[in-house]
Length: 366
Image 1 (cartoon, rainbow, N blue to C red):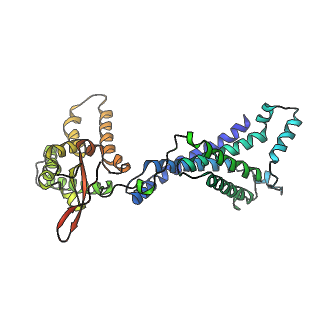
Image 2 (cartoon, helix red, strand yellow):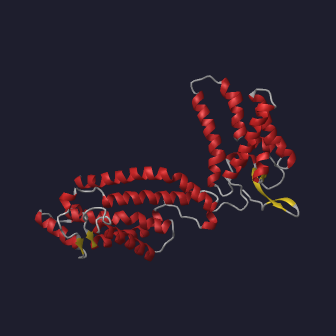
Image 3 (cartoon, rainbow, N blue to C red):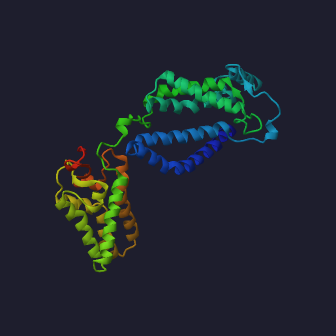
């Protein structure tokens, strides 16, 4: 039990560190993925976050807790170069305690320590094969390299940060860690929770897909137009503002081939899924399921409901609309939200040709 608790506390510290570090790098990670691929590939993000969690927990188990320097810095040799010394230590421990048999061996401290060292590197072998399709030689080489780096850091007192080495740099750790990486490679086919990371060309957004930042900018321009018109030209009533929003986001693109003011500035227009002219019914359905529908809900429905569950419903409606409109497209190759997918519409990027005028970019199927 004491040995188990000595592992649990560092693992807990490593996991809590992952929560903090993971939250800190979430936005930069999303931005990096979006800049590189035009989308956030879910499997890549899952594997990357999994590796981050595994790495931090493993490092915590290897290096924590930091002991009192006065208790460990006594000039002792912190290097073991004899392979399989743990077998001798296990036998000596069993003999000293008058124990024998498989149960005594399996519960001895030396055996448990080596089993832990093997298990610590099993996830690395699994990820190398399942996620990155590496072979057994690569798993062995990478496992050996990572383990060697850890032993060097331990032998140098965490690269001189600690006043002396407080963990033994052991060749048996190299052997067991490397074996663990190979074991992980061997059992990887049954580790179905780890996805295969797709190639870069399969991770990127489809050519011509209009990204979320571009559409958000276009929507902001449209909403700014609504605000200005409502302030200076319309009666002070939200119903008139909603009506003008419908004109701007449904009627105008229906008669102009998909253009709104924001879409014109951001160089995209709204079309049907096959790239043809979108009819008013489809465009209206798209808007009712998106931001305009949320606006209508806030104006007509939410004020009329005075019940105990109204707040929860309001939060649910807002979450569904925002997630479906702005979050779901981030992960899709076609960059379509729920409102586009259900209405059968999509934003189409447009290039301006000097000789022939605006032309649609290559069609993107759903």
